Image (cartoon, rainbow, N blue to C red; front, top):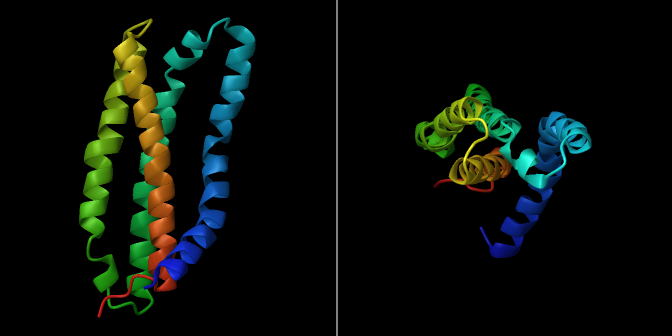
Length: 151
């Protein structure tokens, strides 16, 4: 696949992924508005466990979307070769994203207030969840459009 076509498919895919991401993040936005009204510092906002909670949701949604797309594609006649890495993708998201975000959530909930490293970890996990969600969404759209066909 040539570079202009890859860019076109990627930007087209973002139109489907970003609105989905916004609806996943909507409860977090509402919570942040309420918390901004209640709390006096940015530090309090960053220490909130909602970041880890949102990360876990994003990683979980990434796994679900990937597996649902793979099952749907294979069930509709796709030979499955494009979806062969599915187990690796899902395992990576679970091991490097979902499980750590849940452990960090537990630590944030039990360490009040959480330390700086824990706050940094939970924000990192949240950003990783956003990247995983958008990345898997774009990859799914590319695979479903046939942009990464194997020979």
